[in-house]
Amino acid sequence: MTVRLAQTLGRAVPPLALVALLLGVWWVVVVESESVIFPTPWQVVTGTLEIAHQGTLWAHIGSSLFRVGSGFLLATALAIPLGLVMGWVAGAYRTLNPILQILRPISPIAWIPLAILWFGVGDVSPIFLIFLSSLFPTVVQTTAGVHTIERQYLRAAENFGVSRYKLFRQVVIPAVLPQIIVGMRISLGVAWLVVVAAEMIALKSGLGYLIMDSRNAGNRYDLVIAAMAIIGLIGLMLDSAMRRLEMLKIVRWRYAR
Amino acid sequence: MRDKLDVKGITKGFVTDKGPLEVIRKIDFSVADGEFVAVVGPSGCGKTTLLNIIAGFDLPDAGQVTVDGAAMHAPSPRGIVISQQGSVFPWLTVRGNLMFGLNGRADGRTIADHYAALVGLKGFEQAYPHELSGGMLKRVEVARALVVKPEILYMDEPLAALDALTRFRMRIELLRILSEERRTSLLVTHDVEEAIHMADRVVVLSARPTSIQATYRVPFAHPRKLGSPEVLGLKETILRELGL
Image 1 (cartoon, rainbow over the protein chains, first blue to last red):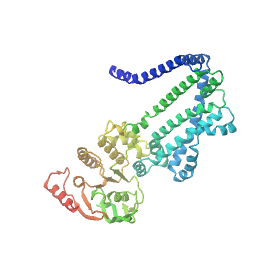
Image 2: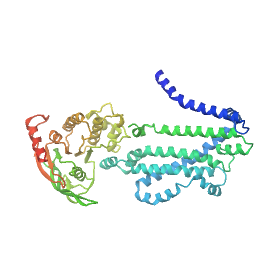
Image 3: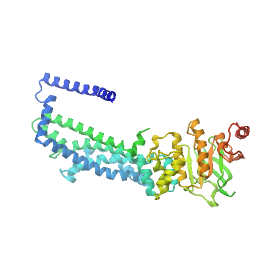
Image 4: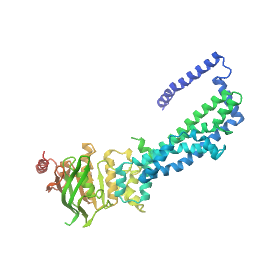
């Protein structure tokens, strides 16, 4: 136990040392250059504590998470059945895939003008943009997952003469589930990336808004950097949460080999 | 004994880039109820194609397969295939796999656990396939097949992916299991010793386009002594028939 603990701590040393080094360099450069606008790491910490005490930080984080959660869940609820159908029914794939492949490379940022036109500047616009951006990865991964189910499993199901419902419940969906989870992980990452961009435009809350507002209202670069760091940390936490899904017993087979 | 499985005039070819390829040319044989027949032939001669047709996964160009006198057109739980690569579902537990073919029968769990015990997997009912060895996976597959009480077992090189020692042990295990749950069995293999060890009759196929070259009865009682002069003599004869 103590050996493993020591090993874990030992592995944590190099990345922590690198972070400390970068912070040190940043600090020294700011002090030496006598910059009046660019903050030191300590100013970022005090700035963060200031808005945390006021409560505005939590409100911004809450708004961003709410938008990402709504858009991502709506997209996932559509993407999984759509991907399954496209993977299973050749006609659906032929019909839907071209339009999907044309829409997919369009950056969600490009949709911002249309989103504002259609949904105004409330919560619906960013949710729509997140919905769009997190739809495609899950659809693509799910479709590919169905296409790559190993034939012997489908044959076995055919051999046992099971119902269509059981074929889907016990063969197709579990076989594709690991791929679905990969798609959802990518989707959530993209969603988090997009919410910040979407919030920079017009809204009154969210971490993206915090960045633009801090710059516009008095060059508070300490808060700009604070928001950036918080976005990074929350992104990391969201990804870790998604990785938890890969540990589920029903998908362990895929990673255990 | 009456015939369980009747294979009549099966012919099959494929269209390839280089033109039509004849794989199977007029194969006729039958398997009696409860009999164990092995089909041996050189690699790539079309053994698997033949088995796919007999089990209903593929259609012949000509000829027909009948089970109890009725023509077979599609796979059914009456004849379960056990293949080389295996098809145990990795996302279901051993018990889940065994109950797969039972379509939610109320006593499904009891039946599944009975067959798990029969193949020597007692205590592993809750294990996932990735926690099992290759030999144990084969046992799961055999048990899953037996659970639905198939009339015929189709085995396509079932033990080929195992190491030599496990393969030998599994042959003996299969014979023990089949002595407790007698099934009409059709084994396709390139392993002549395996065929002689297990089967009542050995059908020897020629190279492609394949047809039946010879048929041998294996008159030895179980358990068979693979080192006995009679067994070695039969093995020699069959190998010579295969051109070795």
